Image (cartoon, rainbow over all chains, first blue to last red; front, side, top):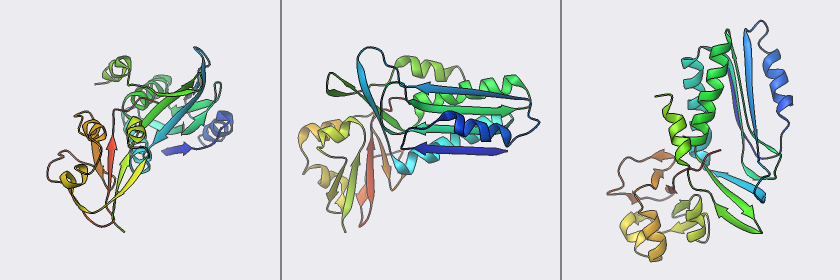
Length: 148
Length: 79
């Protein structure tokens, strides 16, 4: 079972990671991939994600291990950007390989809900030339609670 | 060498920087030297604390030694 967990500091092309990831697991039953991009709505000019080195990547690795065990995965790719991003740039990519589709789909959903609600990232947005910190959303916690 | 405080998210704005070099000693004494507004924000119960990369369950009785790094982590705001 292969876990590939990374923090990326530069813009990335999800396909360049997803291709080799799926090819590394020939004969797998199914792959599910989610790519999140920075939304360009409501005047957001840029988004910045900061992290805390000693906690963020280890936390993502723990999340990947939990998901891999829970959904009996063959492999899991977990990529997350940090730094300044512009609308349209990929910010997160999760790809899960499993013997059956349900495991792959649920693993991606599970990983995304946990990345959004309890991974060590802090986000701020640039609107009208002013940076503003984003507060946690109640919805994010509600979505994570689905997995309890 | 001293010790270091690290401020994540909006706490970095309040502290005018992501890091602050401090003299080792009890956290209470270190905080006493900082601006009140920053200290109030740091003591918010939703702010978690990590000493040298390990989350602390309790914030009482923290004493920083040489080379220690104490991070203040406000509620995360998603990826």
